[in-house]
Length: 290
Image (cartoon, rainbow, N blue to C red; front, side):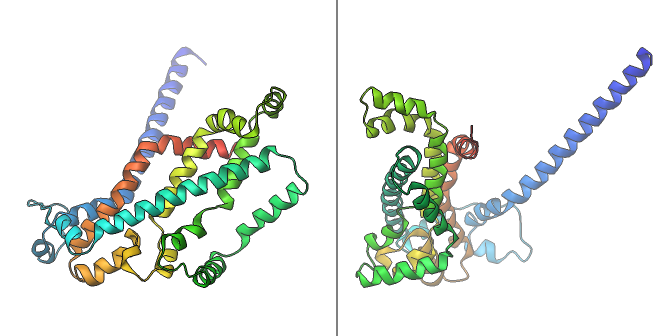
């Protein structure tokens, strides 16, 4: 095979590679548009006036007269600010308590030696096999018997632990060489100091990931808050949407409802955009052993 033939092969390979990349980017672009379109439509609808939206027999994909009136309505027609405050309290307190429980539990299963540890952990993992519906029923009966309905305590208590997060962090802790732990014990370092100074900094990506996922979970929580609270003073933003629809704007005022949804979704979108790299790194690290 001469140099001319080699050159033709290289040109064909280059064209094939460019076509493959072009096709991949086109597919990803189309898929991205499909995924992002609902968010665009939500944002677009939120800046359309009530009259303009209802006069569109054929939906328009842009507006020439955007308005922020719907956002004002979202905060005045219903106590949306109170729902935000309730959700913020619920999210912060639940996440802080859960992280304390998860970190200490994962450390105990990963580094401490006690009788029956493997059996206890296996039984612990078996809890993941129980349907959520059964857990909700049990929690509802327990919270009701304790007279904790329509309280923040009743909202928070069932969400302060997670078997999956304990398992994820335990696997991450076990990737840290055990020799470090033994050396620290020889130097007289306490377990809590070793956990704080060594394990937590090394496992920071996974811890950040768990924290963010829990924040998102709490912010989007719907079934349990809806079940355990019937007092609007304890409604979260996810539960307040139904009141917004029925008592605030009415079923026909879609732009105002979309404005409320945009306001509710905005903190989570910003949170994900800021910490997206840490989330990916934490999940990848948690699922890789060795």
